[in-house]
Amino acid sequence: PRRQELCIHNLKESDETGTKEQLREAFIKCAAAETFLLWQNYKKDKENEKPTIKADDDLKEGKIPDEFKRQMFYTFGDYRDLCLNTDISKKVSFIDEAKKKIDAYFGKNPNPDPTEWWDTNGPDIWKGMLCALSYNTEKKGMDHDVRPQLTSTYNYNSIKDELEDFASRPQFLRW
Image 1 (cartoon, rainbow, N blue to C red):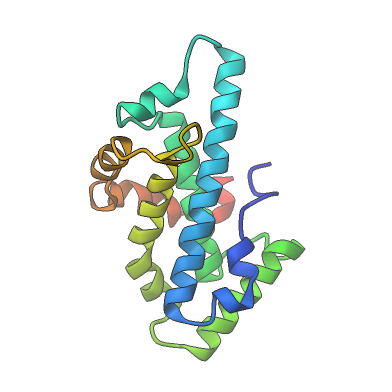
Image 2 (cartoon, rainbow, N blue to C red):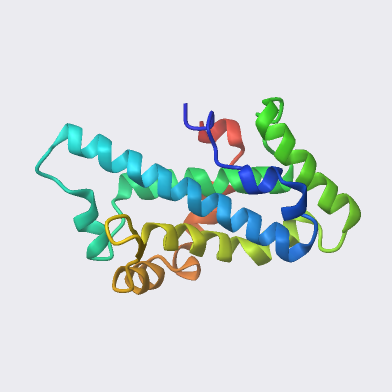
């Protein structure tokens, strides 16, 4: 299942969630890593289904396949749930560790509250997810032609309504 291996390493580390900026960076790093790994898995699945289709070709043209964009929406929603304490899988030990760190931050820093914090930082988390798709594994670096295409086409403000509507649905309805 999708949630069994959600990338939350940076959120579990206490030295990476102590300040507002550290928490923001931890969410961005986790969401970007998760997106990168999801993309690698997606490509492998597509190559097994239809070996002649190369998923990277779509990205090089600045297009995220709809099927994968949906996975990104789910992922964005999963991180939102962790932030807003609406995650229903928090009894899973590795999720619980991250949740405790996030709760500890908001317990010490009530302003802004988690909803305001997410509203402010959600766009940067989404951008981190897009940037992860710009990483070229062959060249071991950012593809500077792809990144601007993705970040302009799928800019948070241009898909905000669709993304936030999806992410704000109760988690059990997204599963």
